[in-house]
Image (cartoon, rainbow, N blue to C red):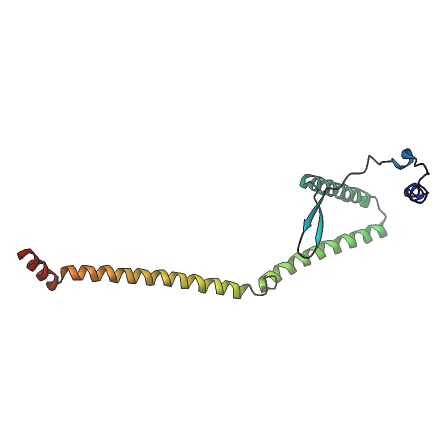
Length: 171
């Protein structure tokens, strides 16, 4: 009998009594998952929001277990017969060489520029041109302001201006 059978029988026959104790079994050891619901234009996304500390604790525990397993394998490797020991060492050296090749491949990919975003150069060029235009606009404003102030100083110092002031003072 599944847990919904009492409910379906009650729906079909209202006089049927529901056994509440049978339906009230809860598993207290189960953790409730905190779901965060995000409403988007495309639909609804449910994210499980677990604590970061919980995730870090689980990762540390897994790393510790892996280290213990490696240490145990090392101790067992010392007591192995020749053929299994050679197979174990071949596997271990293959894993190490694969790790080295992987890291060297990453470094070569970075050096050749394969890992960069596809249009990063164009984006940087656009930002550089935009910055140069802003700087040239600022310089143009400085030049215009500088010319206006120089023109005003030249007018004050000109002979015509001084003659006009002389005439105004006479009158």
